[in-house]
Image (cartoon, rainbow, N blue to C red):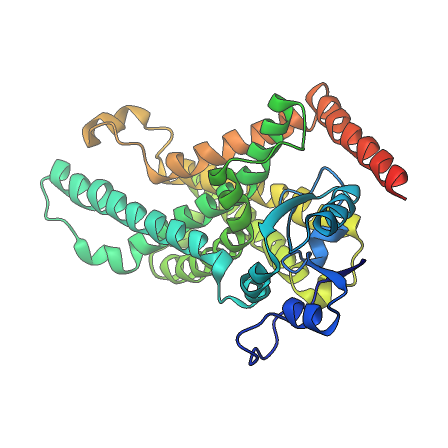
Amino acid sequence: NNNVHDAEGDADVSEANLSNAERLQRMMPHADVVKAFNTVSAYTLKSEIGARLDDRVLVCGDRAEAKDLVSRLVYSIGMRPVDAGPLAAARTIERRPLELFEEWRTAFRVSCVMLLLAYVFVAVRDVYLTAYVAGQQPRWRDLLLLKFNTVIAWHAILLLTLTFGAGLVAGLRQLATGTVKRAFPLWLDAWLRARKALGILGVVSIVLHAVAAMTVNSLFIGWSYVESTEGAEFQGSVLAGILAAGVYSALALTSLPSVSASLSWREWDFMQSKLGHVGLALATVHVLLMSFALGDLPLVQAWSELYYLPPVSVLAAAPACVVLFLRLAISLPPLSTRLARIRGATSIATASVSATTL
């Protein structure tokens, strides 16, 4: 029999809800139709072997020998075939690329939960406990703008930390297992799939923080403060924040299909990975300098008055510092050499399989 690979997506299903692959099978009853690559993006196919964090290819068909042949083709290009069952499964597979915000659901949920928890923490520590210690009435109205600026800044850097933390955890796991062929656990797979949406939501929070900060500072910051010692730290913090916003604006532009299509893979990887970590470092510097300008870090002993609850700046910067430190560690020898060897061995093995198949 002849083997026919179908990568076509969903069209107007009117013939008893048949998939395009099933229609093709009916048109060529003596051939073996196999559905594959329908859920794989062009970006994933373009990625280097070993660097593909989402390398699954759903394969379905009615004849085992035909599916095995296509699965070997999938494996020969450094991806992982997943048997999705008979050809009837193509009905679901063809609809997956057209699902609305399917890959955004995890990111939306995480973002909303983090925003809610951040608001609760700020309301308790910075509004209620601060007023209680001072013997004053809580200024709940500050949650509308003044504390929103704090919350959305915390929200932004946490989302960006999660965005780059996913690839870091995946790399550490590859180092621990010594291979890139072992499937990621479900929680890590979901995290990796959500990182693009997490990054975009983080950029949105950066924009909201910039607008809120400009509004708050124009109303409450005077030149006498800006020209003081604390004001110098404040100016440095604002500068780092502006640079971080500029970096992530560039990253957002390169995410547009019209822009990314004009970049080589190496250029795109440099913008999204290397420059992305630079942006996270600038955002961390922004938070730390602002913490000094507000007196949060120099007055650690004062935390005891607020039941030892650390300020938002510390809770925001600590996870980002951990991610940046670990990323730097695996980017330098000997860990970088070991990771390159692991991915290089996979590339050589895959090339050998490809040559044998051909």
